[in-house]
Amino acid sequence: MGGSGAVSEHTCAVHARALGELPFEDRQDFEDAARGQIATTDGLVVRDAKGRVVWDMDAYAFIAADAEAPDTVHPSLWRMAQLNNIHGLFEVVPGVYQVRGYDLSNMTLVEGREGVIVIDPLISKECASAALALYRAHRGERRVSAVLYSHSHVDHFGGVKGVVSEQDVRAGKIPIWAPAHFLEHAVTENVLAGTAMGRRASYMFAPGLPRGPRGQVDAGIGKTTSSGSITLIPPTHEVSRTGQEEEIDGVRFVFQLVPDSEAPAEMNFHLPDLRTLCVAENAVNCMHNVLTPRGAIVRDALRWSKYLGEAVELFGEETDTMFAQHHWPHWGKEGVLEHLERHRDMYRYLHDQTLRLANRGLTPTEIAAEVELPPSLARTWACRGHYGTVSHNVRAVYQRYLGFFDGNPAHLDPLPPVQAAQHYVQLAGGIEPLLANVREALERGEYRWAAELCSHAVFAEPDDRYARELHAQALEQLGYQSESAVWRNLYLVGAHELREGPPLTPGRGRRVASTDVAKALSIEQLWDAMGARVDGPRAWDSEIVIAWHFTDVGERWTVSMRHGVLNTLAGRLAENAHATVTLTRVAFDAILLGEGDLGELFAGGAISIEGDGAKLGELLGLLDEGDPAFAIVTP
Ligand SMILES: [Zn+2]
Picture 1 (cartoon, rainbow, N blue to C red):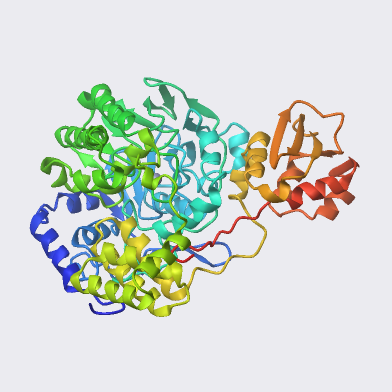
Picture 2: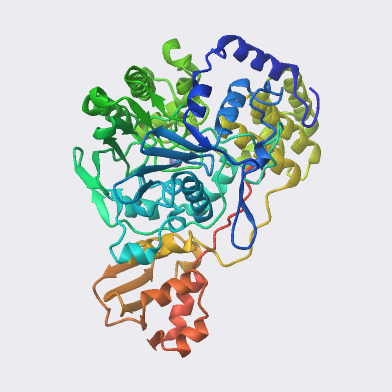
């Protein structure tokens, strides 16, 4: 055991085994990732209007193209980190271009009759604007003639205001196409559980961890998430069925609607005249997540697999080139079909084998220990677990069908972590003997066991710096051994926070999401989000009825608090309300986003209250703020 930051012999052995087992001599991906490169930017750094860095590829310059993996990075992950370092403007086929490495995701540009169609404008408006500028510098000053959102995740729409203005879209000059139910899912996925997801995402993508061989090197499907302005313009045109054909700026698109695949609202599309297929995020060049570790509603691996089979059937014969909205494309019909069929079979295998074993009585952790992909898939680079892993994906399938409970009554009502930890420490004869066991486990290279023991030590004695250091060392070796970029990030952020503590909680003024995303929520969704913030016990005895009249959108609501619950009724102003609030949606947004001064809004007449205004104050006082920096590796 080499102490803080140093790599152990056991970790080196794991890396050596991977080097022996995996087909590192196969360099096709490096050829494909560089194929068609038109331009690149040395020292790529994107800043916002205030000069703050929101995207920094320069920080990854230590991942040299020809360098062997350092002993602190799994060689397969290092290889992916090298591939994801290849950035710039690329030709997919004449008329179709991609900007890669300007954010977590790709921006695809399809040249039309009049202008250029932008597919997926990245996470931040600053990155999207820089990507479009790179394209224009090499392909001419084409105007953006349409935008497509392939699916409802923020890395596929957040930068839209960097490529088009809302005014032009509203004026009908630029259509925005998206799959059915896009807006609903784009705004809800990050709202009800948004604070928890945001905190967990900071472990998964590790934007705050230093870049370097001992820190963050990659995120599996790209380098990391950019941190500029997240924007949203609601779509104007909807794709509602498979087989829907549209001509957009003179280019023929045939859509395949794939809801509940990698995202709740998602679509693939085929460009028949270019014999080119886009599979959105359903078949990237590594294994994806059936359940993302940041947390989400679990995805449907069975439907996901069937959609890929359907894509082969619908488009396979007329496809020579395939690209996705992360990673690099595939060229040649045979290679495209092989890629799609492998991904189809990978998700299906995870699904079917989980259920087979569950039906034999195996529980999630047992299934995770048992399932491995067939060698024909496991030895394919594009099926490696650089993002999703077999281990957490099979547990996700179990969760979808059978839930969090593994069926063993001993696990039905477990003690909470601190209580359990205190009992384990007592059982061990005190913190000293327990830590002696941890040290021995570290010596033997049993890091999972060391982490489990040490987590009990830290939860029982959170101020014991030595316990925290040993725990950090166990997590660090697990991070160095991880082939998955997100597992590495999770372990290394955990180690970092054990040593340095969690980040300071940002000041009050809670923001559920970006301004654009919040404004796109329906009033009902806003009430739902408010309901999930009610501090139950403090509200047990409150009885409040408030009527709300939104004059600009013509909506009437009655919101009542009883039994610690916020109930809402649309279309009615209750006669027995304690107070009636008359306001505009615009003013409501300003209050929720902390943008407006309440006094000024009242003085200016944007809000008025009839009846007992103190009741409104009482209601707002019962809302919890959430904690965007809550502790994870400590109690
Ligand atoms: Zn994505």
